[in-house]
Length: 480
Image 1 (cartoon, rainbow, N blue to C red):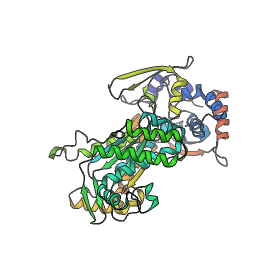
Image 2 (cartoon, one colour):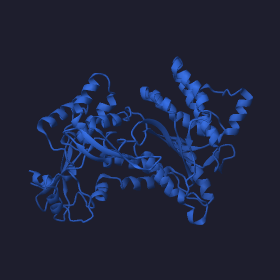
Image 3 (cartoon, helix red, strand yellow):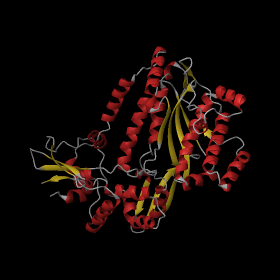
Image 4 (cartoon, rainbow, N blue to C red):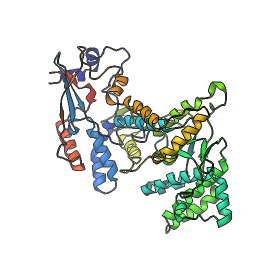
């Protein structure tokens, strides 16, 4: 059996199984998101049964509670030179699990980073007024409008002369009705641009505030002349007004019979006469000089990491929870104010915090990250052509095979064993005696079953009845 006394005494566990002075240790007393979920799971279940909670919320909460438990299965290893053994438990891959979300975020960031070409990129943030926010909260499918509107805004920005020509010739009516949704979708000669978009539905204080973060290279490809053009100037006034027009136009099409939304849209042109706010300034470090020619590489990596941070995990990191009193359901957490840059601490009940967090869980199969232009997965041939043209300018050239090789190297570094070694400064499959664990067997309780809602509910009921320890499974290392 596993010696549970080692896990109950964290200091003794560190002394026996860790000898690295800089290792990161599991703290059993640190407040965790799971503590809040277990305390209020009955409320979540009851609210869902009453029809006041989306299916995606219950499913993701259930998966998070079962993450790294025996109910999802495990792989067993033992050491042939001593009596030590270890179980590595399966992960839930939920969009609300802090543990699974970190790896998912790094995977997304690696894919986006490899795709980026060797030019400066502009970080563009598309926002909407406060009175618009509830529209997108009540109708989750309408969040797709924000993606399409931001894409259309950038397409019109990079093809402004073509847009003026069409508007003058045909009174603003495009030749293909489908182009009314995706601007310039079926035109042969365009300035092809690229964009990686991510939807964030929250502010730092966790309030509902949907907005789009976009990474746009300062380059377009002229499909007629088959040349690339570097872009350094963005017309902010045009960006804001085009973004406002596209959001309003798409909302009008979706809610044709809603007079309240029609009135809101009409009044927005008077109240927001300068357009909806769009942030598209260049970074301060992007100066053109010999010492800073490749500053964009650092900026792109940091920007991609920030954009992908909350695409597959909770909107708040567990490290922001200062304390949590389970008995009184009293929690203290903090956030950094965007304007004053001050640390603001918030004390409230765990249920209030949970309510703020679960509204940001996306629906099943909703894509939080989207690629447009020559960054689209189906435009790899065009991306190769742009890489080739950049290579002639002395920029980094990477064809599709080289990009795949680089991506494989990045993804290999994100494998489970490697990530644990980076976190705990030790190889999880290396025994304390110095030898490596050998694989013994795999336990798969889901064989022949479906990981559906009822199965997860039965597992959660059993866990609560037995009062199982819900510590980190990585620490389940003992002697037979």
